[in-house]
Length: 78
Image 1 (tube, helix red, strand yellow):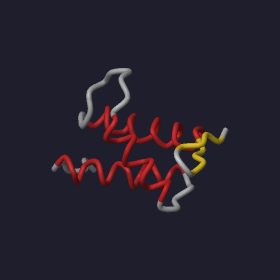
Image 2 (cartoon, rainbow, N blue to C red):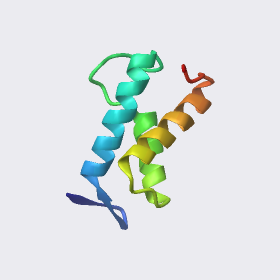
Image 3 (cartoon, helix red, strand yellow):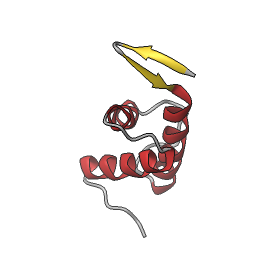
Image 4 (tube, rainbow, N blue to C red):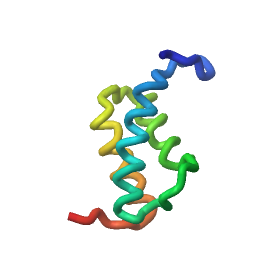
């Protein structure tokens, strides 16, 4: 489903899927609390990546995780 946001159309399913993947990882790693509340910062990162031309949900999620952790000063756990 496409939703118009300002002058651009946004694929809600793509954003939702990428958010679910990234949020699940970040919850399991302890970077964000395990709640049902949407993390606005993570969502904003995903939307910006989409606006810059990334349309693959796995790459969106992975890049969002990397940026979120970099902004938080968190390190990825191997």
